[in-house]
Image (cartoon, rainbow, N blue to C red):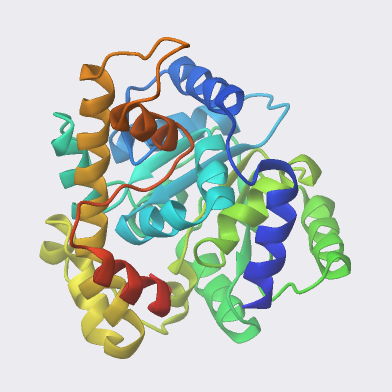
Length: 329
């Protein structure tokens, strides 16, 4: 818990709330991306297939990169965290790409009339990427999980992915600036092409964003609980369940206590937030802009709060908000 508090405190020194200029800059960055995006609760989701992501990453690895690229994945839980955490929301918006992971994000995009091309998630994308042959032997580094889990995950990956070179690994229990500097030094000494960070949300994205300028890598990817799967701590859902975007049911079955609030409370809350965000955007587009001598209308006040990344809720969901704030959803 202290890691989350420290990371958020550090991030809020520079971007606790996105200003209008900040949001304009991020929007401009989004527009410069070659792929189309759909805005889901103020987070630009890149609409792309898994194969296209693999091609893009391969292109990055084979070229000279002056600054590491940040690739993140967003599911319903990610969006709920971002709705309550301006620093985390800013980290997601600063990424080169955020990919839609799961049925919830697909439904939210559909509310805006956009059909996502694929369910792009780290647990499927990363093994497929590491199974590809690169023009030269590319390398990767694993950062995250506890010492035993990351050791087992690294051993499994080294045997499984022969086309890539495992440059090293380090656990994710990094508590201080000194430990952070030491971990970064180890990473930079071996200079991997790709850094896979599995610390969970929001720690991994905040850590990547705050240390990006210090990393001698080409690509940083937040992979969530991937190392737990590679180490054998948990099993993946059957292929048919993953294909229809409901792997969360399998995770809930495996970890009913730990995942109850995230899925059974968090998923409906996310859909409420997504719908309310679409509704608020519709109000912004249809409401008249007040002149300087007019008192702002309720619709224009919604516009101001939306521009600052605030979450919107329809009446009657105060109880749901209270429950989720107490459970950490």
